[in-house]
Amino acid sequence: MRSPTWSSDVTRTLIVEDEPAIAELIAIHLRHAGHEVTQAGTVSQARAAVDAVLPDLVVLDWMLPGGSGVELARHWRAAARTRELPILMLTARGDEADMIAGLDAGADDYLVKPFSPGELMARIRAVLRRRAPTALAEGQLQVGPLRLDQAAHRLEVDGRPVKLGPTEFRLIQHLMSHPERVHSRSQLLDRVWGDHVFIEERTVDVHIKRLRESLMPVDAGRMIETVRGAGYRLLKDRPAAG
Image (cartoon, rainbow, N blue to C red; front, side):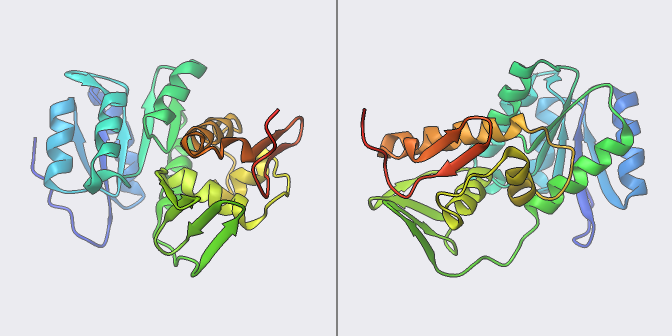
């Protein structure tokens, strides 16, 4: 595989796909949009490419020689250098359980083959918008036992740190900015993921579940309430047991 020679003023995209025709189709559209592209056809090639030069985006297949894209996504999410790496999974596996597994592994979005090149490029733009560096709000948010340091990207509950992924951080930040307000799934998609139409609403449920699971060890998971038929809200304190 050719060593990457990307410059710093372009979007650097790695395509991890073992079908050459599909990889080249994706590459053509990316290059047309101004991306600098490299390709990997196996898990080992993908890891070597990312180790050599950190890309701005990875388009990742699930079924690959030498392993799976889900395992690769977990590997990158577990490492400090690649924890924020934007990942879009592009795979023939279209079952809901597969989509949930891909998102739980750390993918920012999940698209099923066969795909529309136009939709693929729109989803890529959406992922890059969500991951783009933005000015952080200063100060801290406090809701009941939850304390969010927005500048440091740190959540504490009763002084105990809670480990969150980037999407879960944005979710709790938005919910804590509007405690007790009911947010529909579509509203959360617009506020947390960005104003686009390509992420499915059930993606919200997956990340709410992950956020609750992160809060359970500090007895705060029940503060995120499901409002039947309406959406979700953050309570101002822990609900009474019962």
